[in-house]
Image (cartoon, rainbow, N blue to C red; front, side, top):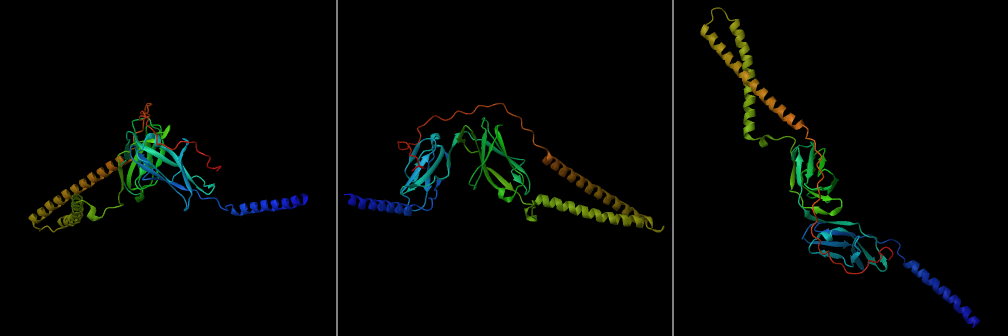
Length: 336
């Protein structure tokens, strides 16, 4: 028996060593890449509309898991379809997947926002929605409720421009306007206490970046004709001023035997030219006054905002049954 036991013990030792070697060889050398989570068609979902959450991982995934953070609820599936968006469905989501006995790192958090919970704010552009290149414009989002958070969206961009404010409005300044700033903008308002319940979007505002200079074909006919007449008047006036000077010299230095009617006709002609010169000068003064008034109106500072009195937040919509998930506690993803 001692000899038999002495033979068996080394065999068991080598067998365990072989299992350890096999396990070491099968251990993955690189961690699994994390998946991505997307909301289709958008992460901003109006109340009553549908949305689909999709987890994207590498090919050959054994199991997907999609969860809502803070709720302890999850589903072991790649797609989560929400047929009717409710306030209870808003929040942060993430997903992960399993290959064999190994879980991937979780995806980046996706913020699913319910819009249309409150009435829409008002979006305006100051001093004007038409801005020349290099100019300055401020997009202002205003609400009648006591919201302290605002978000500005430009059509075609992937994310919002958020700005906290406590005066029931938020300013989004654009210091140096370029052609890329042209487009359609909308803003939302919400409270920091309910960051995933937003108002309805404001009415669209179209920001137009005007050209540096207009071509002759772009100038209205009335403006072009008045400028042409003014330039022709100035040209005639300057020409007549030279001719008037020459004529006055001829009248002054003419011999004593000159014909009197000829001199009177030239004096009358000089008076007409002087009247034309005066009219041209008055036109120039009038145009200069219009330019000065326009410059002053553009340079006039905007009125200072007055801090409004504290306004209450609107009531939240009625509590509705949230999107159902399978029962059961969520296992620890990382530990698995």
